[in-house]
Image (tube, rainbow, N blue to C red; front, side, top):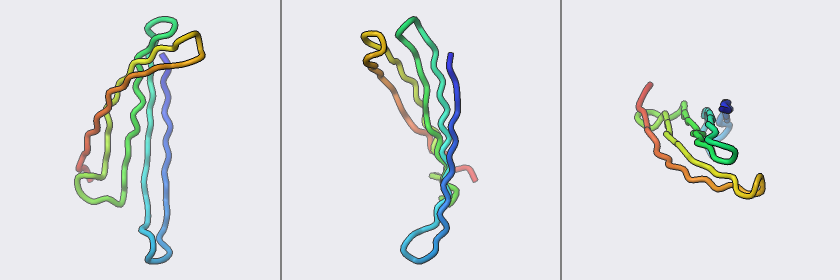
Length: 91
């Protein structure tokens, strides 16, 4: 099993009327389980938080599970994923 996390945050403070200010966070976690030498089940969704958003679209929490199989050793990889998102109106 492999697992990890990558977190990013973007800020932009509005200096004129041409752009809106930005405060956004993305958190991607990944995890995979090997099913043999070349096959694995994997998860790698990216959670999004828009700190400037009001109401029900502030948090995006996708649910994603995939299957991959490496063909020909390490030359190519095929994967199939199912992805859906849950929008949470938390404040």
